[in-house]
Amino acid sequence: MKMSTHLRMTRWMRTGVAVLLATVLLFEGLSALAQRRGSFGGSSFGGGRSFGGSFGRSGGSFGGSFGSGRSFGGGSSFGGGMFGGSRSSGSFGSGRSFGGSFGGSRSSGSFGGSFGSRRSNDAGSSFGGSFGSGRSFGGSFGSGAPMPGRSFGSSGSFGRSGSFGSVRTATRPPAYYGQRPISSRTYYINGTPYIGHSFSFWSGFSLGWALGSPPWYFYTPFSPYFYFHRPVLYNGELYPGGFNWLNFFIGLLFFAFLIWVIWMVFRNLSGGGRRKIRYTTYN
Amino acid sequence: MNNYVFSTAGSWETTTLFNHGQEVFAVQLFVELHAGRDEWDDPVNGGISRGGEMTALVRPQDNPAEEWPIFPGRLEMNFPGHQIVVENTHPAFAFEYTRVWYNGREVTNSIMDVYVDINAADNVVRAYVTIYRDRWLGTDEVATYNIL
Image (cartoon, rainbow over all chains, first blue to last red; front, side, top):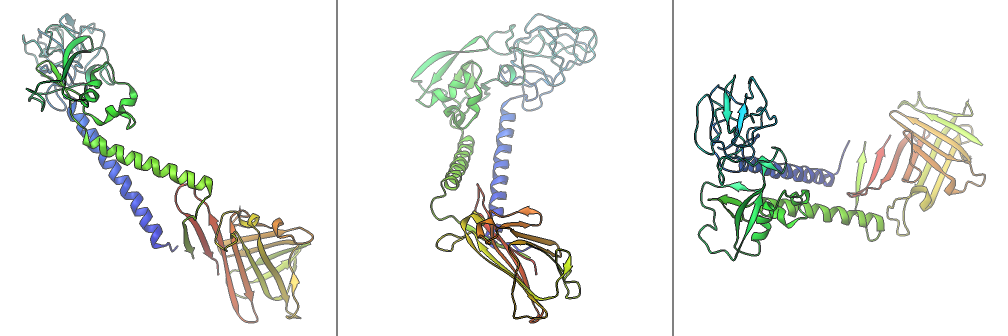
């Protein structure tokens, strides 16, 4: 079968575009994973230390509780252990959590979290847990920051609420830190108030991610929010996350593709104009 | 109405022509169909519906100067790996009543060329089919299948 050079080139171009798209999506996925601090079920918000796993960066409690120690303090870590961690009804916060996740005796309560058989009295940390019959106070879901001893974190871990929340925590001061905001307002994230600072018109598109659970269309190139990073939580305050260049290029590719498809469909439906024709010969 | 069946396996010994099950001894089978072109003779989708022209004849061995028309009727041509069927049962051989199948698929509305010339006298063997492939996305294709 003999095919024209033109056909081959077109195929190469299509393959190239597909590879490019796949690469971009992979990068996006990895960056999102890294931003989630703790990824698989880890706490993505709250910044609490969780000595439990952390599949990504710090902060992620990897799940269930080993050891028979106790853990006090609790706090919130928005997201708490998920991957493997038992997630039964229970102790978000500083309440008791009986039992544990890994083979824990009683499962009413403990939210999973933590590794190790140590104690911790630190607010914000989540370890302890209970591999066996120990008790765990506070559990791992939670921690963090603003209100020790309490837990937010809604129920879910995957999804928009809870651990994969709509803000990121930062250990370093964000770019806007120290600058004078043009406006500030309070954002409630899972019930907890945070002051969010706006430094320009565009800041709103980043801080908008913190307005409750981001709707699905925030994740599409049609939404301006798609082109901005989620806000950064630093020192208990929210700062704009900045422009998302990666998503910008994804959006460019997406709209270029969309326009191309529309143009092709229109051209074919209308039948107008001189159509390009490829001549091929098959032997 | 004729019902020709031409078959070949690639050599003169294996080449046969039947009409209504009766073998026809011929020196030439010639079919030429052109369709699917606009007023500037450029390829367009539509096949037979765009109009065109067709010549189809058989020259018998006993009198090569004579031309037997094939249509109205049906002509089935079997080649190694290919099959073409052309049918026109209109009594006046109106072109728009032509139907074409290639390898079992009807290509009446996308056919551009059918050319078959099996000439034993001049030892000429040639056959090809050209089909217009309309695509919603992407460039349309004019595909020529060389059969012999």
